[in-house]
Image (cartoon, rainbow, N blue to C red):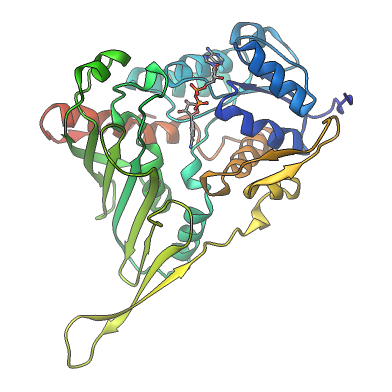
Length: 383
Ligand SMILES: NC(=O)c1ccc[n+]([C@@H]2O[C@H](COP(=O)([O-])OP(=O)(O)OC[C@H]3O[C@@H](n4cnc5c(N)ncnc54)[C@H](O)[C@@H]3O)[C@@H](O)[C@H]2O)c1
């Protein structure tokens, strides 16, 4: 094992399921000198440590927070730990990145915002959907005026959670809406004013009981009214009893161009370009084409470029080459880069606790609306 330079950041990756993917990305970042693994499953921790030639680290957060060498913790433990752990990390004087959702209660979001502000530590919610190549491309088209005025947005997240750990069973789908809603809020630079939502279908008693949630719905759909905007964001969240392959994406319609997510999740986007009314006829001329969103790597630290697609790497200290899957539109290295750069530049991250709350709280309000037969719920501003 090689000894890393000691002048960079020391990052702890906590939770080594999905978290495994981030270990080589942090190790490759020039501002990071050391990665520490935090995982209660000893065999899993040992395997990941051996794979990447890093020290095994710790079994849990208590030991990690006592380690003065650790500058920041990236939380990828199960959802029920997110808010509590993030607050503990910040209180311990360490920076914190956290997988979505930031929290599942309004009170925890308020505590998170207060803690980030008071401690001066940096927080980032690691929302993959707004760093994927599809969103970055759509955002560039919008900013250069190619889409025209945005008139409608649809976000969808369909994922069958059968067989997932018990903390997922019966999970209220709207409590996890950030992947489906955030692209609209990031693109338009706004937040949600109010929501009207409904539940669809019914969950069987066993699933309802397993996770201990008060949620009868396998699917929830919501219409989100946005602040200072006439666009409605229409979101479908389906986690159970929905016979459909995994899909997590957005459909975005402007007055000149519409972008539609690929039916099979990966692949080219469908682009509809409207060139104006047909002279003497009805309707508009619309051309339809398929476009692979470009990677546009100029805004990503060079050492991380390889991670936007599936890759094979062998870093110093690694015994042999390792395959690293990309996924989520190549967003993982962008998330790492933004979190690390926010720390080194001494600024708040682009998805700080206030923005994380703006992207998370509407889901809680949507579930409340669905449980109240579609009552309109105003979404408060937390700041
Ligand atoms: N696109 C995305 O942003 C995306 C994708 C996948 C997962 N996630 C999120 O990432 C998180 C992890 O997902 P996952 O699929 O790996 O979950 P998981 O439940 O499969 O695995 C979590 C890992 O954390 C470990 N763990 C459990 N309790 C822990 C604790 N108290 N402290 C430290 N480690 C603990 C487990 O042993 C396991 O290795 C979840 O919150 C999930 O919502 C986000």
